[in-house]
Each structure stands twice: as structure tokens, then as C-alpha cells.
Length: 85
Image 1 (cartoon, rainbow, N blue to C red):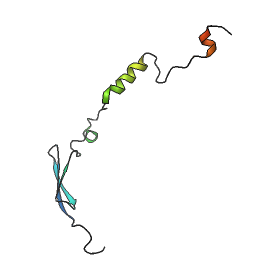
Image 2: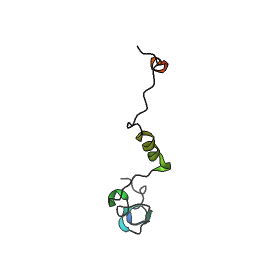
Image 3: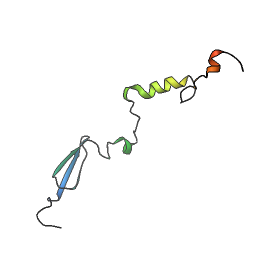
Image 4: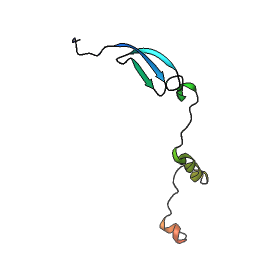
């Protein structure tokens, strides 16, 4: 390593928005974070689907009637005229 070009590596106190604090090492003396392993939904088991704008619910309502998740089959020209082959 070259001397004089690297930042100082010191003990750091990390503070989460939930109030949890722990110590680690960093180039900063204090860090403030939004999520940690004590409050993150993945680690706490309280994970849930975030439905922005009701998109999932609208999708379920739209396709609940047909029973399929795909679009309807387009009618052919013969089917639309009502003639039998």
C-alpha cells in the first residue's frame, strides 16, 4: 500500500432509524441508516407485498371472471360471421 493516500480506518457507531446501534469499522466515525437486521421485514419475518396503486388487486379482479391469467383468444373471421363450416 502506498503511504499517505488511504483514508483513516476507525471504529464506527452505526445507528438505525429503529433505534438499534452497533459498532463496526469504517472511514467515518458515525453512520445513520434506515434499515438494519432488527427492523428489516425480510429478517423479522413480517415481509408483505407492497401493492402500489392497487395494481395487483385490479389484475386479480380482471382475471377472476375468466379463470385464466392470460388475455382472451381473438375471434376469427369465420366465428364472427356466425357461419358454420
